[in-house]
Image (cartoon, rainbow, N blue to C red; front, side, top):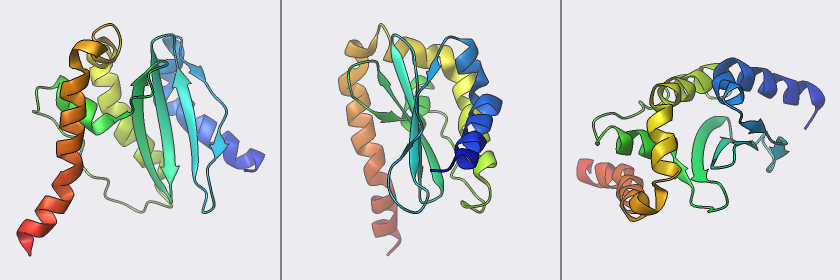
Length: 151
């Protein structure tokens, strides 16, 4: 990955996820994860890791308790901490040209529910782990189920 691309990613992280850096999270090394501009980078603290992933232009955010390698998507985490009342809407735009809008789409709900997420994925994670994994499994099946129901 070239330096200019790395600098663009870092600038977007600072702009949208600066609140994590202000809270003491450390920015890891941006890793190129394949062809087509795919990359990932961690923002981590002593108890929680956020991983930004760009896969073929689409940006995702997953999180895991530090050292546990139990990755849950931000969409599932938000759904969980809001008692299944709020979802992050699907991104509507040009994936390859609206990366900054994708960062904003993820940062806004994370900022809003940051303390709730820290609690669930920090000291209370073992208490919620099974429920989170079941919710992840259930939500991962939803697009397929919706597609099958509409056929």
